[in-house]
Image 1 (cartoon, rainbow, N blue to C red):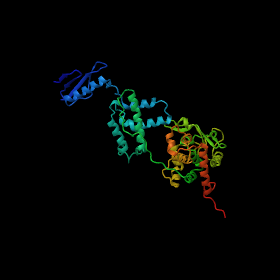
Image 2: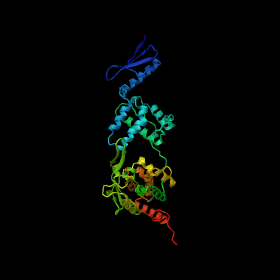
Image 3: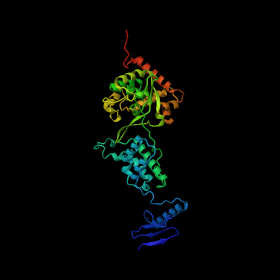
Image 4: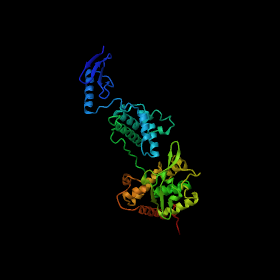
Length: 400
């Protein structure tokens, strides 16, 4: 027989199993509600009732059924309803959720996601334990490793979703409490010399030579440089207008979108010595008409980053002593060279298309120079290079 004990708040009883059950009256509905688990001793059941009573008195009690919603559907809805998400960001969130969050937490109720579960999940990502079973046999490259940067992105997404769950009062407190876990600490990326930039450009197919030079010396992102049209180039003023970018969207292909932020819409000055190269490229490779795209694939299609290695990028980078070079390292190189010209934070932000000064500060020491001065300094550096190597980027010929 079960034994019942009554108290001023709630009741406990011993079950036939030998464990103790605690129950109390729901302060909202008036229905009798059991504790979510049983206890080994009567004292443990009493202690739980005391803590629950304190929560009711202090107004901290919440309906235990709130938060009994699986993480998977909630996360999918969170991504779908997130306001003002850029297309590429939304695609990233969907991928991160499917790859790293859903497999671990998809069927777990929000209220059951604890700090301990979060710590274990992150530790396993960092240790790549979940990859060991398929490391040798799996053909999916996404299963070959999890970088610290990707772990930080996944953790930030998890934290953001659960912060909304906290605001929705589905959980009391966000269980993502690991200090610094969402901070990305990418490895230091290489900065090319001007000599390396020109040699790299020379190693690429002819229709991509100027593509490399413009991307570097104008500090452009992949999507920005591939979206330049004739109308955007003013060789008289030595400027390029950045007003759009190509984005590769999973399921729908290449789409034109505005730049990454409002600051991304900008006009960038280019070094004067690049003007004849750009003009030659326009004459030889670009169709007439203001809407013609300046940089395309050999067959006239939009350049895709995913196919760029097939065009000789890796081999070209290795040939100039920059094995493992990323295309974005060209922008990094251009930003570094621009900062060395003595540009101010504000001027660097404008040139880079950044609405936050954090990225600009990385590249420079505070001075006051205009964007045109940046291009002039780059021009001087290229001129010195050409004096030593000849007008076409090769070794200067000797005269008798």
